[in-house]
Amino acid sequence: MKTRHLVIVLGDQLDLDASAFDGFDPAQDRVWMAEVAEESTHVPSSKPRIALFLSAMRHFAQAASERHGPVDYTRLDDAGNAGTLAGELRRAIARHQPAGLVMTAPGDWRVLQALRAVADACGLPLDIRDDRHFFSTVREFAEHAKGRKQLRLEYWYRALRQKHRILMEGDAPAGGQWNYDADNREAFGKAGPVDLPAPVRHAPDAVTREVLALVETRFASHPGRLDRFDWPVTRAQALGALEDFIAHRLPLFGRYEDALWAGEPWLYHSLLSAAMNLKLLHPREVVQAAEAAWRAGHAPLAAVEGFIRQILGWREYVRGIYWTQMPSYLDRNALDAHEPLPEFFWTGDTDMACLRDALTQTLTHGYAHHIQRLMVTGLYLLLLGVRPQEAHQWYLSVYVDAVEWVELPNTLGMSQYGDGGLMASKPYIASGKYIQRMGNFCKGCRYDPGESTGPTACPYTTLYWDFLMRHETMLAGNPRMGMQVRNLARLTTDKREAIREQARHLRRKA
Ligand SMILES: Cc1cc2nc3c(=O)[nH]c(=O)nc-3n(C[C@H](O)[C@H](O)[C@H](O)COP(=O)(O)OP(=O)(O)OC[C@H]3O[C@@H](n4cnc5c(N)ncnc54)[C@H](O)[C@@H]3O)c2cc1C
Ligand code: SF4
Image 1 (spheres, protein in one colour):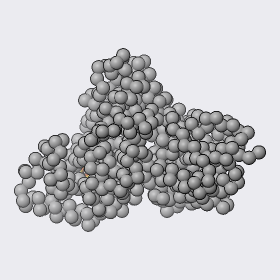
Image 2 (spheres, rainbow, N blue to C red):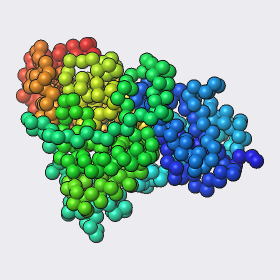
Image 3 (cartoon, protein in one colour):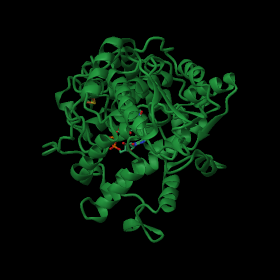
Image 4 (tube, protein in one colour):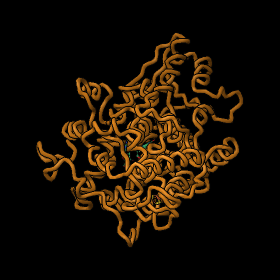
């Protein structure tokens, strides 16, 4: 019998109940999946990231074949693998001669264009269905954004809370406030974290071990390492990771959301982004589990609201930004930044203690928590004046949770201010003193966060003042930056020149 639909499943669409499977008939339809080198090389994907995608795809194909019949699956090392999604899809079309193609909306604009082009070239209809893995649709976001000069998270988040009845008491927000940030975001204090709960491990099984060996040989020159790989690669493991977070880390999530601590990569974070982005976990079940923990008295409201805001708020918001702004968003560079990415971002080889820790952990685990990404690695690139597109490529390469719809707005918009304030109301800039306040790195560093010039000056502090001077006119027009800009008046002409010279030196060194 001829194939009715070839159902396309991408590496970040690993949900047996995805819209692509609506009306699936194993007698007429066929699931198609392919591992292709292009998805690991269009940016130099890190070894942990490649391994997570491939292992999760292989586990999912097994589950899909049990539910939906045989899966047409191409492995990376299969003979004749075309190396691109488009090339592999063409080969699958030739094998099955389907009457049409069906898929859930992909997360990447680039992938959507490539698959559309194949469908057009083959004269096949491509049925693209809404991704039910989000609380909102891109259409709803576009409607919300219509006529607004600036897009801000808060109103979008509140609308979603009301619509989906999350943390609500009647028409009012639970506890009477929409936002509990004031109760959150503490540092650990001198003693540091006490009895940090170690996250549950997911030891590699035979499928994962085979993938790890493949990645180690095939992508030997790619960044990162695999000897600590323990990410959840199945839905069952992802549910275990959720349970572990809710039981052990959620209660202190909000309080230490912004804290940093040397040698402690996880703190009280959930580590659920990769599982959600691959669609092993539904954000709704994550949000519901967190709300239930509050209602059961297991976690305080401030922690739960802070956590839910990240998922129902930020995650939905950045997706809306991505799909309403692409493809021109990719090229934006509002600060006219043109420095190259420092080479040590690929190795971690730097004498800046905070940056070395964040980079080493990133390359070891494919993970850094939000404040490390925003206020350690991202801040350094922003202050140095690195081209946002190079920053984007790095973030898309190294993190296990990196998928363009969420990575790009966070990097180019929130972290690098490349969109000129569409996403963030001001550039997230700070001197080394912020990093000193939020953690314990500076004590063990050869630099001094209080110094902006001289041999022990903290590079963040030098570059912070240099950034303020370089962008003084633009920043002076931003009411949220007023105090920082006014502080420039404290600098003498000589000091300004010394800072500029030291910043030039840092750029040459990078
Ligand atoms: C420069 C930069 C790049 C980033 N790149 C990515 C990326 O490629 N993929 C990614 O999923 N997140 C990205 N983020 C957002 C955030 O840093 C990660 O989601 C988070 O660190 C993942 O760790 P976690 O699961 O322990 O998160 P938690 O701190 O436990 O937060 C809970 C969940 O909230 C969601 N979330 C939190 N912050 C954001 C945010 N700003 N945008 C969207 N969702 C958010 C995530 O799904 C996360 O799992 C980036 C942030 C920055 C500043
Ligand atoms: S002194 Fe500067 S570079 Fe060193 S750890 Fe502190 S903030 Fe980082």
